[in-house]
Length: 333
Image 1 (cartoon, rainbow, N blue to C red):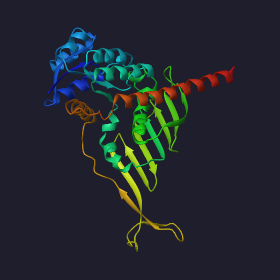
Image 2: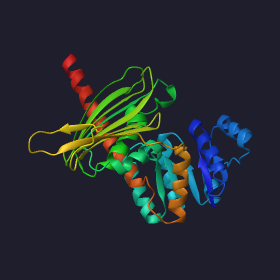
Image 3: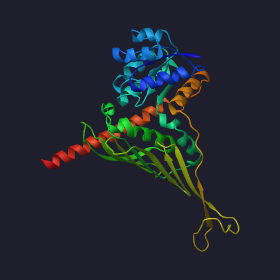
Image 4: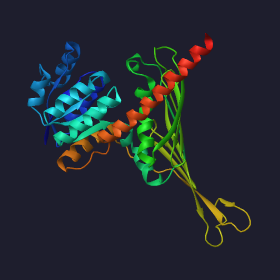
C-alpha cells in the first residue's frame, strides 16, 4: 500500500480523493494540501481527511502525490515533488508550457521515479476495447463538444478539451507530425472557444479535430479509418462500432453482406461488430494503473513523455491560431 497525498481539492480534486479512498488495497490517503479554506473545509467535512498546512509537510509524509490543481501550478508542484523523489500523478495538460514539461522530464530522470499524466480517455473502456482493432489508421476525425462551463475557461479549448484527442491520436499513430493547420473563434472568452485543427503525419495519416466548449449538446466521438476497417469510438456513451472487410474464401454465404470488387479482384465480406463494453470508472482505472507502475517498476500507460508530446502538438496548434488571428486583424486594417 502506497502512502499518497493530494494537491488540490476543487471539483476534480474531490473526485480523485473519493476514488483514492475507495482504492483501499492500493493507497493510504495521508491527507491533502489546498490553500483555499473553502475547498479544504468541504473535504474535511466530507472525507474526514487531514489538511496539511504546507506543501513540504505533505511531501514529507508520503511516497507519491496526486496533483489536481489549476494548470498554472502544475510545474511548480511537480518540480517540488520530483526534487523530493516522490512519484507523481499529474492532471492534464501536464504543464502550462512545453519548456516546463521538458524540465519535468529531466527532473524525473534524475529522481528515477514514476510520473503519469491524467489523460483519462486512454482508460475509457470504449477506447480500450478499440485498441486491438487500430492497426494503422490513415484518416481520423474527432469531435469533442461541450456545453459552456466557466470552470474550464482559464485555459484555451485546445488545452481544456482537444488535448484529450491529441493524446489518443498520438498514441495510435506511430509516426512523426509533418504539418499542422488550425482555425478558431473566441466567442465568450478571451481565447478560441471553438477550434478545428488538421494534423498531417509523415506516414500519410491525416487527423481532423474539432473541439468546442459552446455547443448545445455534449459529444466526444472519434472515427478511425484504415485499410479494410472503420472504427467508431464514442467516449461519452462508451460505445464501440467496428466495420471490417475481409476477403471471402470460396463461395460466400447467401446471408453475408459482400462487395464484388470487380473482375479479377477478390470478393469482400463485411463484418459489423459492436462489442459489449464493461462499466468501469476511467479515473479509478488510471489511478490504479499509476499504483501498478510504481510497485511493478513499469512505464506508466500515459507517461510524462506522452504528456509532453500532446502538449507540444497542442502548443503548435495554439501558435497556428495566433498566426491566423494576426492575419485576420491585418486584413481588417
